[in-house]
Length: 233
Image 1 (cartoon, rainbow, N blue to C red):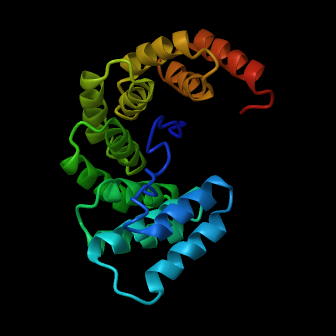
Image 2 (image 1 turned 30 degrees about the vertical axis):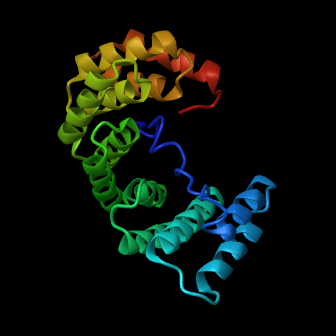
């Protein structure tokens, strides 16, 4: 079974925090320019100098710099460094906007599913209607094997946004893991109407069809998958 597809969030990238009034924190403004010029390492060096240089930075300034450093590490796919930085940020300011969400994304990228789920849950406490956080938490629940809890999360997300493709896919996976194969089959087929080239749906439909004893469907979906990706198992 394939459960890789999460959609927006989690997937999705970290939320940037490089926009602070230059008169208050010039280093952030300079780092933002360097980042836009495609010079992330130079931007990081600028922020590190501001963080460890002379002068006393107040708590909001230190938090903003840590957030920007975490964002740049995330963009460079150094998820472990980003996670460390966002953890420091949350020590400085536990309620920093998007702090828990961004840490959750890093932990998810490191496949640390339980800590990631905890941070997505905290993000939802601060922003209960966040679709990204709901999708992230649902995906972590699937990875942790608690499909019933994941199903509840995806259904709540769909009540909020019935058109969420990622939530529909997650719900289908949760139904499949709960052995509710007919419901999963129906939902996967609905998804294929709008995403006919979805390898995840086709792969999972092969498994679901086999469970239902529908071997004509197994053949059909296997042929469709092979047409998209020759050599697929």
